[in-house]
Image (cartoon, rainbow, N blue to C red):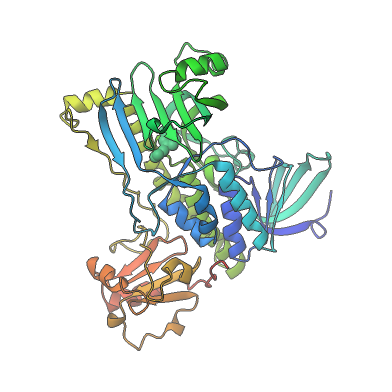
Length: 502
Ligand SMILES: O=C(O)CCc1cccc(O)c1
């Protein structure tokens, strides 16, 4: 065993290099935090998992300077249609093809290994961030000033050991870090086996369409998702009497797919039975150990929000970790991570479960009976983003806990690129007296209507003269007048500004 003084030392060790771990590592890289990522596998997981992310995720990728590199690997999703067994449309969840207030499109489809490669490639920009593949963490021991992290290098069987200020478990549904935290799981009640089939088309099948489809057939609910390039996915319910292995055998897979495609059209890339769970860890932090992504929560896929939730975790957590490690903020700042994120992700999971009910059509029948679904007139579905849970939002003033829009700047750039992963005060220049100099707000960028024309109208639309926004783009507090603004500024400890990615 190495003693404390000789073991390599990191501010943060991230266990797991999937999209959430890699995004978190890039954000910490941006903040100058010394980070080590330990990953059990040799390379980016070569089989697809998540297939969808939203505008908020793309904004996080913009923050880490990788959005432009990711763009060639994604396609826009027009949305999802819910069809009954006869093919009639029940629910129309179309997405606008225009930019949302986040400055991106609402819905992107992607191939997870492509995204992981970009995120992992991005780590090379940060000299203080390193990645060790084939390193299987098996022990985490917390003491008064850090965590001893022990792992096996699977390439040669050697044991390794490092010290970390904090360890973040981005290590998936079966998380080892969660076991060391000792957290139980809240069960939201949805656990269903689905056969997930990824195919590569051998010839054009444009007729399959660009919309995702939910086939709400009570005999066998199924989902179709158009992927990037020639990739197409079907997710098909496994019936209670079916064997998980047998249903994934090629003959059975083709039988199940025969309504839509045949072996002449496509080859199977992967077919595996997954049980979609709906669970949330009860404890996301135990002192220096924290969870992010699937280790903290798992959702049925029907909203395409599984990975998005993990990316939001990373954006919420990284600046708080940096504030504690780098700026000496009190460690209990980290408790606001779970209190803010848990209710948010819970709302998404509950909605995904309700959608799962719709796909099983019983809910549709009930909706028809209640007059909610009219024949020949599909209901339009609009998904609202939940509010952050209680944490750092100040007071009950308008907008606290909501996402701020991204503004076009007068110089042609965009507000997030100017602000970086930092704090910003949005003020209407006409309402800000010259007696309030910028230097009284160390670590907080100021953006006025002189910088971005739309700032003033946006503030006025909400009846406020200022909004204080955190690095994860959530509004911390707003001010309706000068007295509110004084109170807002007095209530915060100005954190150090973090510059934007190169
Ligand atoms: O919104 C979309 O286009 C796809 C969301 C999605 C992805 C995977 C499974 C699923 O049921 C929905």
